[in-house]
Amino acid sequence: MALLEINIALFYIFFIGLLVVLAYCSRWRRYLQLRMKLPGPPALPIIGNCLQFTTNNLCKLFQEFTDIARSYGPIVRLWFGPVLVVVLTDPDSIENVVKHDKLCRRGYVAWKTTEQVFRNGLLNIEGEEWRRHRKIVSAAFHINILETFVESFAKNSYILANKLKALADGITVHDISPYLIRCTLDIILQTAARVDSNAQNGNDDSTLNSFTTVLNTMSLRIMKPWLLIDWIFNATELGKKFHRDVKSVHDKLNNEVKRIKRKGETAENTGQNNEKPSLIHLLIHYGDISKEEIVGEIASIVGAGTETTSNACGYVLALLGENQHIQERVMQEQQDIFGDDILRTVRSDDLPRMVYLEQVGNCLLRSYLFSAIVEIFLHYIK
Image (cartoon, rainbow, N blue to C red):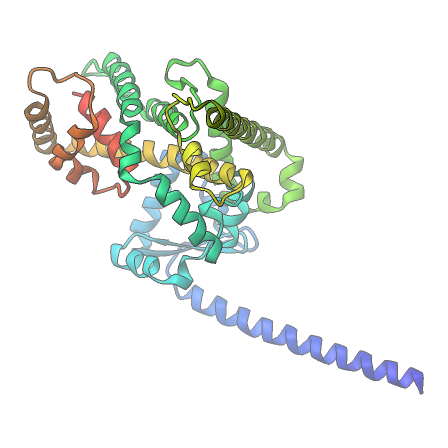
């Protein structure tokens, strides 16, 4: 009797399990059918389209994506292993996705590649926690606060302009992206964490190399999905170096948070604090946020901001070079503002007068921080 009851229980478990598997397969089959209707290059079993992307160079990788989009249309299906990636180049399609709440959630691949670096920063969280963090970060990015960082923007932009001027012989072609990355890293580290990397002058290549390794590795794991499996990734030299560099970056940010908190407590006791605030100061001041959350937010700002800002600045410069009539109007506006003293230090009250330059920058940029950086160092580059 007991054996019969056990057999009946096992049968029910098997039957329920079979129904779950069939339901999952039915859903997966519909998923595949819908996605195979999207245009895209042929994909190999298991690895998908991974072998079509043979470079780690971001410029060449961008060109490969561009070529595929031109061949298959504004909506392209790609498979990176079992992970489906839909590439959108049509502005209307992008707008529809961005406006749809359910489509704007972080996917597994995005979360997997960034969780160790950005922790619980805005890029990695959702729901009520995201709303709470955004409220705090938005307050720290208020325009009146960002204006206090203009001096740092101007100083580093002037260094960049002089370095680019030394390269400009009118004949030789140069890749300026390393110069832009060093400049934006110096600016964002100084304003976000009060850390002087001085990467433009080569005084702290370790910080630059750590950030570069971390950002490149996150991109590489997307292109090689077998590296998304932790035990495989952790066993590689790339994974070991990635973890070392992430720890190095987080340790620097942790130490800065501790230093600022100690200094803040001392200042409260003595009534003296002459240090200019950084975003870490502001995040601590604005409050209901832990040290670990602050590190995650600053890592997100520095990690995501450095590359996106430098890339955006590079695009603006390239577009100005391709459209000389636009560049001439930009320069005329600068001369109207600064007169004969074109190289004087840019002040915060100069930025609202750069109306036409802002219109040019807004083709690619959407935040005041990035726009201010672009406006200032484009002013110095003649």
